[in-house]
Amino acid sequence: MTAKTQPLREYKMNGMPFRRLGPSGLRVPLFSLGGWLTIGETVVGDPVKEIVKTAFEHGINMIDTAEVYAEGKSEIEIGRVIKELGYRRSDLIITTKVYWGVRHGSPNDTGLSRKHIIEGTKECLERLQMDYIDVIFAHRPDNTVPMEEVVRAFNYVIEQGWAFYWATSEWSAREIEEAHHVASKFGLIGPIAEQCEHNMFRRERPEKEYDPIYQKYGTGTTVWSALAGGLLTGKYNDGIPEGSRLATHSFMKNTVKSLQQKEGQEKIRKVRELSKLAKDELNTTATALALAWIAKNPNTSTVILGASKPQQVIDNLKALEVLPKLTPDIMEKIEKILGNKPKEVHPRSRPPLDKLAKL
Ligand SMILES: NC(=O)c1ccc[n+]([C@@H]2O[C@H](COP(=O)([O-])OP(=O)(O)OC[C@H]3O[C@@H](n4cnc5c(N)ncnc54)[C@H](OP(=O)(O)O)[C@@H]3O)[C@@H](O)[C@H]2O)c1
Image (cartoon, rainbow, N blue to C red):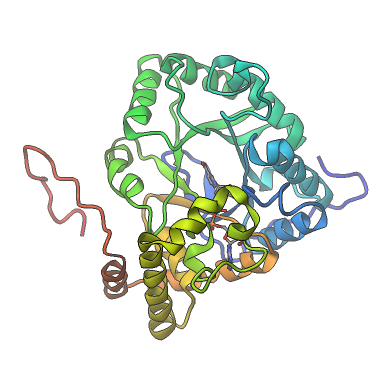
């Protein structure tokens, strides 16, 4: 996969911690890079290369994309820069997602039918110019397709060597449970991870609904929008800066509107308090604090960073310095500011056997 004239660039971890992706043997960097709204959309050409190169030089060797991102252009750009940069394929972890499709002519262009899973995956590989994907995600559940068909189709993709693992994104705990049930009934491979939104303002599903799934199947999360699209950086505290995500993407107009309303203003108040806590007690930024807080969660396998500039990658990786400083006292102060901790799931009948286990 390396251009003939290009020597291979060696990967070095450079202090990046790795975790297992859920119950699998795959080791993923605690921070990875994603391509939604940026790569192939607002960022094209050489600037993509600069972002990917900066990430790689800081130990990020995992890139997440999807067939639908920039209607396939995200995968095309990622495939192109990886070739141009001369990375060894085995040094990288590439994840992509099928469901939304890139065309909308035929009803089979989207969804999780066997047809779209297989054709969609093959098209992803073509755009990425790769022989295989490390993890293929079902970008959403599709309740119009029998679960057995979905699980068998992803197993076929794995058997063909087009992907090593499969995973889900924004599936309910019940749907993930059903996939595992079908997989174990037929001796098939179940999903290893869930790509979910998880940030200081979005907690119920990853911290409560999935609790039984973590316990039962060891599912890991590849977290998206850990900065709530940039809100947790504090950049929207005093309005919408030019060139920012909320200024650039017209479909964000509801988010922009909500920031002027009570709920949005309350979030901004909390971001201000978090910034103060970060500065006064940890000598850091709200950005690094928010990312470290997600990384600290034991169910997080990787936090996917979104970045429109190389400097954002560097700034965001300051979270690695903050992570060991998140003492119980700091965590408690964060909870006090957020005031949104999901209530613990209590067993309905019998009490837990070992109350000390969670300490
Ligand atoms: N599975 C799914 O359904 C799903 C959904 C969404 C995303 N994802 C994945 O998750 C990845 C991350 O999601 P996300 O992009 O929403 O993550 P995010 O971290 O919440 O937002 C990233 C955006 O915030 C801004 N930003 C980041 N770091 C900053 C910094 N240090 N200072 C100021 N602004 C900063 C940048 O936008 P601007 O500079 O443009 O303002 C950047 O593009 C995506 O790329 C994608 O791979 C998956």
